Length: 116
View 1 (cartoon, rainbow, N blue to C red):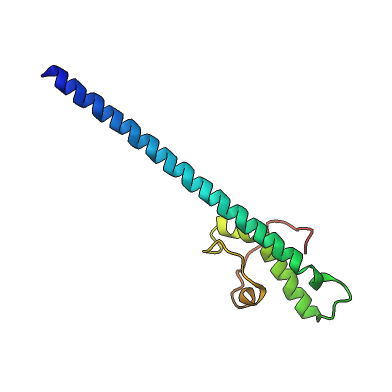
View 2: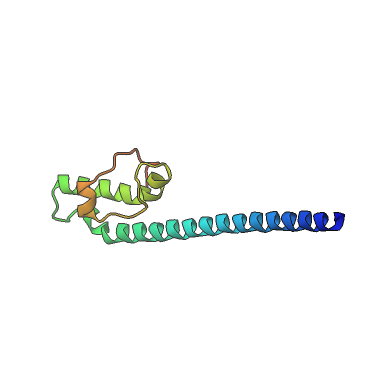
């Protein structure tokens, strides 16, 4: 009888270790997925920054107001990850310029950046 109880205790202990290991793996997997998602967003925002470089050229035929709006959009692009991490935007995504104009998140930039 005592041997049976000891086996049950050992089995329960093993089960707890397996569950703990499983929980750790799930957390690691979630962390990895989050890192991959953030990296994807980072690449996308930098791509969009490069695509709108033309808006900041001095002889580009945009009004001062349009250039200002594009500058603000570029600041947003450089801060997407920060905004999401600090819950200033709900979704980790990079908005297109027109979508951003209709849904401008209000925030203070992390710091002055070279691309604005």
